[in-house]
Length: 169
Image (cartoon, rainbow, N blue to C red; front, side, top):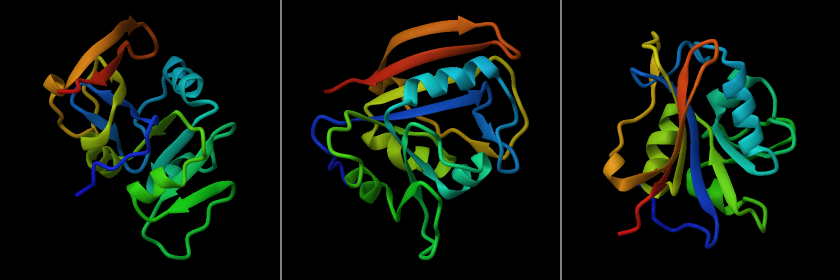
């Protein structure tokens, strides 16, 4: 269980793409290539900190340029060139650079599930197609979030990109 302790003035955001059946991965990789969606991811996260699980990092194969990369792993000796290693989500948030105003959690499924209770904002691309896979985006209640923006995009696979913000009760 995650404590609700977060850094003041830092937005915790999840950024993800999923198929209409919630699939986000298959065999350690994204089971689609959508150039426009990848460009959107880059443009949103550039200049910020990204936090990802070890398996997500290894599927990418390198650190993401022009971003502070934090990798979550329980492996004590794990090293990743150009990355900061953290043992858990709260430690990762604590080691974000001073002045960071928004941190992006970018996979995988375990990280998304753990982070949902403390997430302030969701950047979610939903592909208009069911795709076979073995990793899923966790269920969450839209009643806890309000949709800020949404746009349908025609690409290799049509998808809807939406931004949701947590409703503070």
